[in-house]
Length: 310
Ligand SMILES: Nc1ncnc2c1ncn2[C@@H]1O[C@H](COP(=O)(O)OP(=O)(O)OP(=O)(O)O)[C@@H](O)[C@H]1O
Image (cartoon, rainbow, N blue to C red; front, side, top):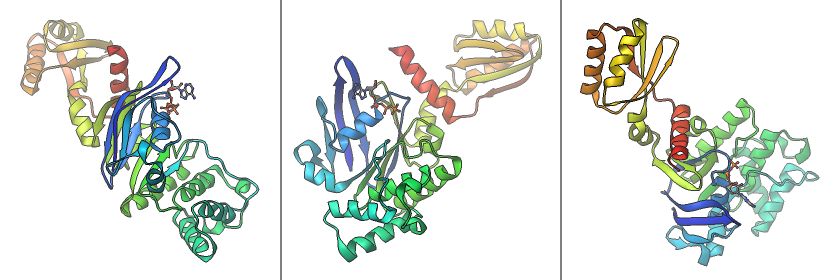
């Protein structure tokens, strides 16, 4: 559905996108995650045709988007991170105004806007002025607005930012419903666990490059080897540390109180051998286990590793 090939964009000397590649298949809900300034908004603005790339290509359903802006606009719905709402309009007037931009007017517009307001659970607010609505309601109205032309691909830039937990939950439920109806969705956030709950696929972007992408399980297993081992000793901690220092698979030994954390490059057999040699050496070990996969730490690990590598 959406293929991005070697996309590069500079703002004077600052490189915002550095040969970025991305592939989203029809029906996927793709979470685009990265720290502030990673290049998410720049990517989305290029895909929607609002910004021009320096080089690289964007294909929507196999059609090169830069040579066919009209098809691009009909297939994509975009909800930007800053929403321009018209405060002196009522919610339904606002929706009908957007429908009219796409040539949908009269009864047809009323019916469509009513359906979309139902979808985003704002029917009761149809006659409310936009400036009287909460931030969460305005976000949902913006989402409804981006759906008026029945796009195939929905692009959402940080749709949950600034929302309280309840409003975030409501937004998530609406997106799940759209996904269930078959819509392809690209959604950005700088919070990985939030996206992981609802996305079929995740791509992590750092400094304009795609660092890793795939299903959440694929990302976790690809990076699983980086999960540290946590070792607790009741006493004789130095004896454990002596052995750890000699072990060729052990890196980055850190000690805090009675907890030793190591990165271990060996397999399970080598892991078991390490444990038994520490015990034989007289270390009193009460626990020895790989840290549970935690998406937040994984995200920090992936982005920090890239930082260290550059
Ligand atoms: N109009 C602009 N002029 C100059 N530099 C810009 C402009 N827009 C973005 N940048 C820079 O390009 C880089 C990527 O920015 P972008 O807004 O795409 O990141 P982002 O991942 O969306 O960040 P955030 O999560 O903070 O919204 C950043 O270094 C940013 O400072």
